Amino acid sequence: MGQGLTCKKPKVAIIGAGPAGCMCGITISKDCDVNFFEMAKPLKTLLATGGGRCNLAHAEYDFKELAKYYPRGEKFLYSIFSRFSTQDTLDFFEKIGIRTYAQSDGRIFPVSNSALEIREKMLAQLKNARFIKEKVIDVKKIDEHFYITTENNKYLFDIVVIATGTHLGLQFLKKLPHKVHELKPSLCGLVTKNDFSTLKGVVLNDIIIKYNKIVLEGDMLFTDNGVSGPIIFKLSSINSRVGYPYEIKIKFIPNKIDLEKLLKLNNNRTLKNALSNVLPKSFVKYILNFLKIDETLKINCTTNNTRELLLKSLNSFSVTVISARKGGETVFSGGISLSEIGSNLESKLVENLYFCGEILDIDGFCGGFNLQNCWSTGYLAGCSILETMYGHGFARYKDFS
Ligand SMILES: Cc1cc2nc3c(=O)[nH]c(=O)nc-3n(C[C@H](O)[C@H](O)[C@H](O)COP(=O)(O)OP(=O)(O)OC[C@H]3O[C@@H](n4cnc5c(N)ncnc54)[C@H](O)[C@@H]3O)c2cc1C
Image 1 (cartoon, protein in one colour):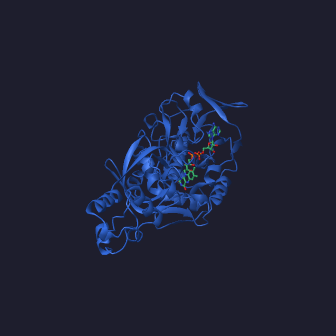
Image 2 (cartoon, rainbow, N blue to C red):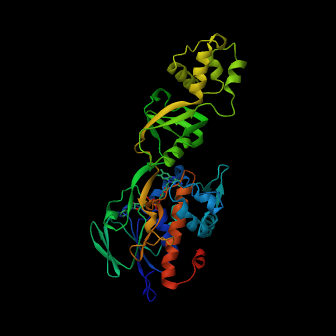
Image 3 (cartoon, rainbow, N blue to C red):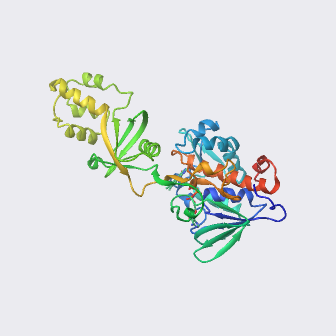
């Protein structure tokens, strides 16, 4: 850790005023001269989160369990979450005047259901910080100082925190000595070779997807060029680094429905009518058409082969995924390799250089996990800076009041 920062307030540059950068800035704002470089509006990215309601955390209070929701970063987050986890996040927001509630699915929102409220109350904590609306194009360390170059100016700092997220790319990081994992879309829709365009907008509930040993259950939405919805977001996250194309098997019928029994009980009805009891009509039409089965056929007039073909297709339908759906990514996997970052969020290669938030090679599922990463790593990066100055344990800084 850096020495010689104890006499006067150190000049800290935080590049990126998103959730992670702002959390870090709030943590150190009383003790440091905080300067944000933000090319857009501070905390602008927060406004779109949770459909404008901001799903800020998830009601998982065991830090080891919480870390399991991150396909990339799980082990690294053990140590992070053991020091700042879900309850700490809720305490933080309570202290800055934001009450929260958890939905039955575990997602936590502000009582106001307003991302704007969170933005305003966080920015109110940063009233002494300076915001420089410039794009950073280079960060260099020469001797004890960092030289930050923007499109317009050059600046000098003691400490730098990089919290630029991943949505604008990683260009300027390439000049740092850090290993960077290529960005890949995660939490996104998938484009399929199978043509589901006639089903665009149709939702299937409680379907089961199998990919190798992975089994997922949830709701799926058909799109103009493939599939989307919660279960697909999860699959795209798990498989973010898997090369395309890959094949998945879909069980369209929820586990709770016994299809064979359904067909027997509806022996006198047409396949179309019987299946429409448990699946959307448009999907039934699609699958019968796809299998070239006459939809007006009564079940008692179908052959064993036809029924077997239908059961097989509804229970294990092959879908070939050919790419991620462009433009819909909420999160990217990739970023700064965790192997060169200490558990205090400081670079192992460059003293007094810190990283937090999505720029790290950490990404989680939908449900508040990605913002939790920002709050935890942002807070702990701030604590590490304070420890460099004072040498105290981090617990002192849990009090934001
Ligand atoms: C539509 C949408 C909805 C989402 N909803 C949720 C949700 O409900 N819950 C959840 O947990 N997660 C959600 N996420 C993910 C979450 O928003 C991100 O994980 C989080 O914003 C990452 O925060 P960050 O501070 O690391 O980076 P960012 O939020 O990306 O902030 C980085 C900031 O750095 C600035 N910047 C970048 N490069 C430069 C540069 N060179 N110079 C100057 N400034 C720069 C950018 O302008 C930006 O303001 C959502 C994402 C999207 C896109």
